[in-house]
Amino acid sequence: MSNGATTKEGPGPAAAARTQNPKLRTQEEKLDLLAAVAVEVGLGLKRGQELLMTAPLEALPLVRRITEHAYRAGAALVTTLYTDDEATLMRYRFAPDESFDHAAKWLYDGMGTAFASGSARLAVAGGNPGLLSKEDPEKVGRANRAVSKAYRPALELITRHAINWTIVASATPAWAAALFPGEPAEAALEKLWNLIFSTTRIDREDPVSAWRAHDANLQKRAAFLNGKRFAALQYRGPGTDFRLGLADDHWWLGGGTTAGNGIYCIPNMPTEEVFTTPHKDRAEGTVTATKPLSYQGTMIEGIRVRFEKGRIVEVHATEGEEVLRKLIDTDDGAGRLGEVALVPHSSPIASSGQVFLHTLFDENAASHIALGQAYSSCLREGDKLTPEELAARGANTSLIHVDWMIGSEKLDIDGITAGGTAEPLMRQGEWAD
Image (cartoon, rainbow, N blue to C red; front, side, top):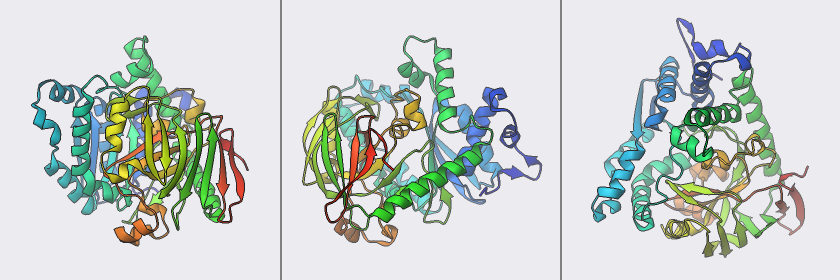
């Protein structure tokens, strides 16, 4: 339900745009509608709530639209923190070596305080996916580790779904250029915006209703898996022969969730996944990535790893291997899994034929796994459990949470019952039922 997307003066521009033929909408109307859907459906922003937003500088037009709709919905205050790619590169070119072991802890402490005080969280994605690909991997790894440590208190509130949060994307020139090399800048940007609008259902006659229906379908799929209570999943595909045990009392989620503050939100826009918590000690075999991973400005390609007793024991990548190794060495839990997600190959994102070079989109084009921190909400009553109780059920703990894609039209997945019986779950990347 909407938490007040109108004012006393009447509905905003996005509400009017919903009644128009989608093919006749202008770029400005679609941008406004994306902002409205992010606030109304993604965040479910509550009147009187504060909103903390992060975004690249190039996303300013979308940020301003989101800010407007947040205030229309009754936000007490909207605060936005911007990132700048050029300023980030200046650090790598001019900062002293010791700089890379530092992070703005005061800033991340402030974010944690904001979330603990009830602020909603909205991240606008859209940075350059290869920004740091040519920088020293040692410095990149150190900087990422410092940020992960500083951000941990805030991240725990997000992974516990203590607050309502969501992520949406803005097309930016650098991201568009990476996806469409050789295209004129304006044409590339337009193509990327069109992809964002289509995969977030902004091109529908009524995007809000379309999101409600899609959310219901994901909830139905999660309910089916929760009824099955599989003990493990078995993956077979090119370069992949992998068995993944599921955490004790695991719980599948999909689409939206009710946060600890009682507000219903859809954390990722777009989203096509159902996901749960694997057991940190029960991963065995070899897994090969099917899409590149863009991690903190570094492209990592051709990932292939082998697990024993839940831990990665062999690591290979055709590009960015050193950064991947340093990522896995972040802490004891970084080489174990904290999430497993199932996505049909026929998802709108996969059907677009576009590799987005951004996890928000690419993880929703393919089944995937995530290194690092588990979501406690993916365990029965997990948000009420202590860290020790979560660990006893198999939930992983780490400073990181990094998704990477392993699904394709050639991947088969079986659900393994507690008695050891294998049931077809996905065949050639599609649901078997």
